[in-house]
Image (cartoon, rainbow, N blue to C red):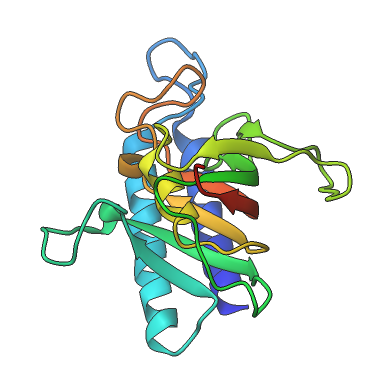
Amino acid sequence: MYIHKIIYTLLMMVIACVAMTSCSEDDGVVEEFPDWQVRNETYFDNLTDSVQKLISSGRTDWKRILKWSKTEGDYISNSDYIIVHVLESAPQNETASPLYTDSVAVHYKVWALPSTSYPNGIVFDSSYNEPFDNDVAVAARFLVGGGMIDGFTTALQYMRRGDVWEVYMPYQLGYGATGSSSIPGYSTLIYKMILQDFWSKE
């Protein structure tokens, strides 16, 4: 419950900042993503601090995972990690994880921090309709190393079949400072990911 209160508090702070800064002083035009870089960096740094304390206290449902292409000997900052909240763990007999060269079947949903018009964060993409129904939803299929963003590629290589994760990715492991066609630059991404299956290339 403690971490949920922290996340709620952080999100409320983001919403408050949006409310105070969403209107331009010059022309009254409403900005959808005001002070976006600062708010996203502050949110992720604060979340990192909170999760590190939880991990140190023995909590196992939260993880920090280093970017797949980094090693502990490299220069490392908070933005080289994804943060994982384990919502459901895979069955105990599922011990393997996908390799970089494997393909996966995964359900996912991705959204951003709250913005002016989206107090719960705008959903950029989803492979399923809410509420999730495993009997109806069709998993998306990807090559793990097939050009996905680093945060997504990193998470997949630590998941097991049946894992349900909520993954927080700093913009450096997402779409960077430039963003994409629908995602603004500097966006912290929040993914819900459900690994259904994976397989090796024959």
